[in-house]
Image 1 (cartoon, rainbow, N blue to C red):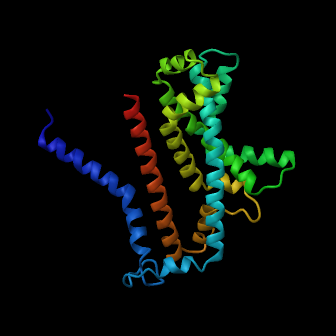
Image 2: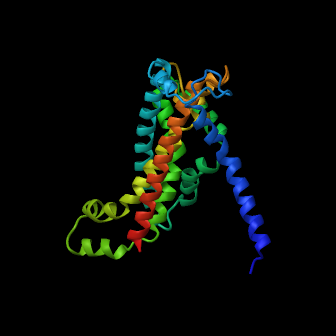
Length: 264
């Protein structure tokens, strides 16, 4: 048994660790409601800066571009990642399996700078103008592996006898997939989509390499303004992003828990 002193030290270390991680975020959220234009001086409670965001056309355009890229890239990554997970789970041995799995999971462990630079060189060598679609393809490439991991974790515990029973009753392979397999793994697919959407939403490095004129994302816009100085508007838009990402992460967690409960 651990001594009271040891438990106290563990609790203190855990508290300091969480404070180090989340206290700056709490401070940012609090100062987003600051009435003063000085971000380090509290001038009273106010929501004026959230209203000011609606008047900032550049931030609104960047936010809309970010949402479009996130939805498109997450949808593409979900389709490709789910198919990749099916291939890796259902076919234990096939020619090029090691290479295929390496290509799927490489973006997860590869530094984002390397991923962004390699995609930039690819687009330049092919003569493709950088814009919305290049950022979308880049984010889909980056998030595809994460979706595959989430879906594959569900397929590993999938009861194949359900598919076999449907096939014995005369269902075609596509009917077995759409009516049996897909509904069962749907929570994992949704969790993978939300994870891909979140990763695309707050990406800065890869977007910086693959974006072009008129396709600036919100993280890039925030970073460019922060270089000139932090303003209350930045605190407000950052708070909104924190809330959105938190909701998506909670949604993905709930979907994953539902999927685990269904599996058992």
